[in-house]
Length: 184
View 1 (cartoon, rainbow, N blue to C red):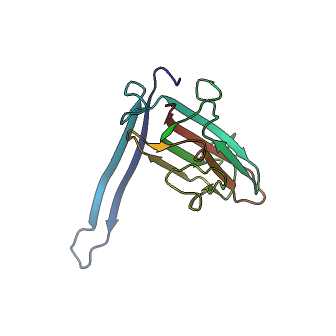
View 2 (cartoon, rainbow, N blue to C red):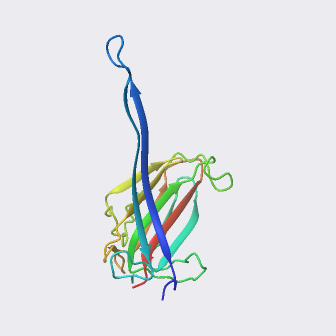
View 3 (cartoon, helix red, strand yellow):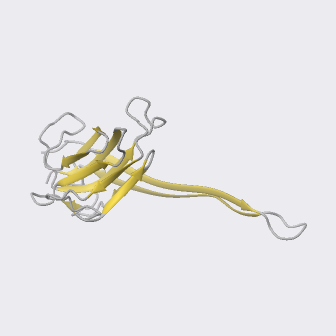
């Protein structure tokens, strides 16, 4: 069914100003910047889930992952941002994962050293990683990916689980997950 009207954006931005000394007297320092490179990826329910740039579901939640433990997120059984439960995604168009530090979120952030995303073992989600490939985030780190193409990353009975493992043996982790997807 999906959210009737939904518009989302993922923005990836890198900016810099760099300066270094130039050899010799009387030379000005070498400079590059200020420069900003930006990629904005938008999706909308108006486009339709199976079209490029289409999405009708948005899930965003903070998961508490105990020390030295893990959480498996079933992409076919979620609760969306409007509180609709039992949401089953057919495709993922974007994903943002943050390991919250205390500076990021004074309530939910922790000092957990790192998390690993992927390698669900049973029915692993076929996102940018496979069942054997994983991505690690250190405290305060974030990652985002998006595939706004018509198919995105498909989700089904054998490709539905996303594993978040807390690598810290003494401190729990606050992990914010935001998923943009399509119900069909």
